Length: 536
Image 1: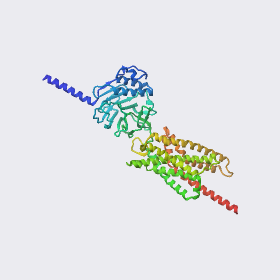
Image 2: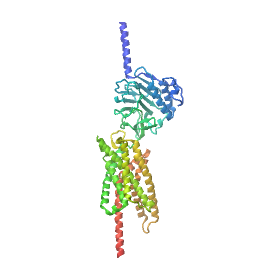
Image 3: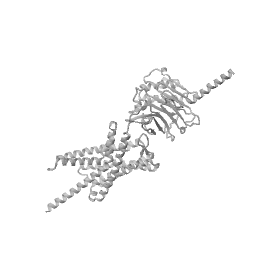
Image 4: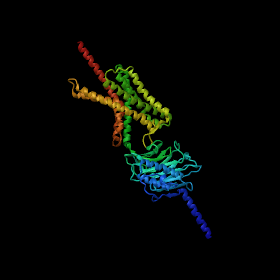
């Protein structure tokens, strides 16, 4: 009977130990007293020679996270990943911890059905932990194979090191999460990898939490392939990504508050709608007025008007098109919006070129088939740019989230490099050229003021000068340059000015056009009066 009790007791201990092992992988604590502070010198391979010792490498990484440079940190992380992948373990998994690193090595079997991992700063488990700050969900599609080790790393920088991996923004909780499969480069997953961060610290209203991955080869953070699932006020954030690498949550300068966003949205909708309506009236007046049609400058202006009509026509319903599940419709809207925006920029530059001929060159400005050549540039260059982008990859056009919650989106350019190169880059050149022309216009106005006709008051002259400069500023798109000043403390103010001035740009052009018509009629009336008085 006594022997039976001992047998039952032994079996119970064995059973409980087996149950515990399914909840949490066996853990090896890597005591930092096992190494000497190297001040960030050497490498894992140098310090752990002739050893397959992941703990030794983890302790070295602890030192690097405290004092190492960007280059040393990247090298140390890559070496640690390599050490853990090749470490020999008894069983299918092994967890390791040190001062700043938590790691898991997992060897899957042939039937990989995905799994969840939970981690805190000092522990890692398959089951939720009381102090868990991280949850990782790996999908079935990952299918690593039985011979390929999965490595999960959580690195946390000490508080003394604020500039993490060279980022200009604060990294939430100073943490980086690494996911890798030995011998494989995992990307383009349809079943996304989900990394959930428990937000234990409050995020300021002036900051936005956005998911990024760290590109080890380019040594920078990027959002490509990652979606941030988070609404302000929630206590957890999920990074849903289509690839494996090193992930972090960056606290970037926040976009306007929800209230400001709502106001800016209404301003934009009202401004663009009014601009579209008045621009159509402008075209109608141009068509019905023969003398205006004969004016070369007016014909240049009306091309800019048409470009703005196309821009507003495709911008206003864009968000609604993105909400529709039709990928074909979204592709068309993205293409059309990109084309009309580029056409608007090009015609602004051509307005500057036309002004250059009138104010700077002045003499010998006749150009054969002038308007035809301008039209080829104004409508042809945007078509070439858009065509090249489509030929390279049609996937560059699609749905683009407008905020971190991904609840609203528009159809536009999905790739940041293409967006920066074809829009911001092009507009930067246009803006610099047109600012030069705007300066030339101001200089010309000041020269004309010195030769003011006798009997004309300074007040009347000042009004005309102000109207002239405002009209030229609108045609040259100078106000679009506010985008370069909408950052930091000027973000909200800059966005309000940008939305007001640019969404109403078409309406301002309409007012300027009406003043030009009135001026032309006044000139004709005065000429007729002078002719009658002379004949008398």
